[in-house]
Length: 427
Ligand SMILES: *Cc1c(COP(=O)(O)O)cnc(C)c1O
Image (cartoon, rainbow, N blue to C red; front, side):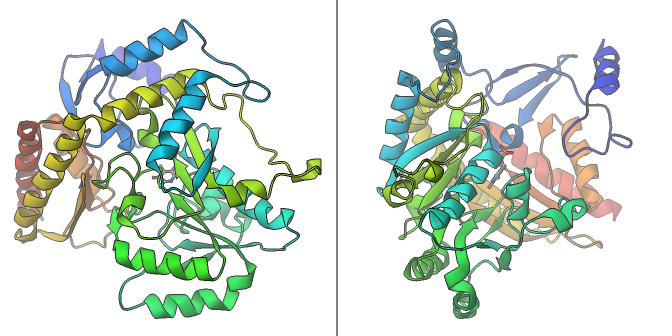
């Protein structure tokens, strides 16, 4: 049984971020419930990475499922040019109420990368529509904003972008801010300030780079400086949104407001693909004109799909419930206690945490990198123990669904320490 699905899969499917020649067979998952995923032999796995950082309230959540089911029997899809529907209106209203007050308009797309594409096009055309030739873009060195060409261009240059090097547009890359380098960063930005169409950044946590973290005060100061230079700011909350950092949005840790924001991943609670780009009235107004050429010519077939909007509405209801907010605080506190244990462990370095996200690095002979062999070995060991973790090389992290219990978290922590000790012995 097991092997048959694996064989059929290998015959036809090409998996993401996977070297198909050397990869192990993909594990067939037949069902999910809460924090657990079940394979076709009945083995259960704790999903400690929320299935690539998307699942907020557990798998096959009955509340979301029921709402989507009802919507599916009412209206599954309608063209969003010239037409609208209640779920999109309600979702935009509900979301905008939670965002910084300058966010006024919602543009729908399909995933995190497209939310970023839309944001970049908004910024470049914002300048263009005003007759300004601003073409330079500012981003952080280790940034990750997605895998489509625009999103890849504003992501840090790495093995992932290397084959496309020449074809990516030019970006000015700067370090993330800290109390020591902030003045130098400002000086660097000043040189190009007049030509910069926008500054795009992952607030506080650079996820795909290996859960690198930096401080809210430093980002706020950098944002304030960008504001003074009239640089449009895109805050990519595709990962940090919807409670991950301990607050509803990373924006809630900051004193300054971005012009544009991007959302996906947790937006629908991890049930359906959807992206959202929000913007301020000022950005929106630059597209209002009797001149048709000033239109934002962008749209996807499934823009504001009613099923995805409904899933997002249902997920946000759950997120705002008192018990979910308590769970987020509990997970953050448990993580915080676990950082103390990790910090004292001689095989571990660079322990960091923000809200429900915790990360650390294994001390190895080889360099900290995505290709560090230890990643694959520990991944396999965790799978054997029924835990899905996905180390980025020697960087390990947890991003659990909010429905995880403290016992389940303790079970994961205990296994983490055992696995670290196991690999220390082998080195
Ligand atoms: C995952 C991610 C993206 C890309 O989202 P996809 O839905 O995978 O296209 C963009 N920005 C950030 C910060 C992300 O973590």
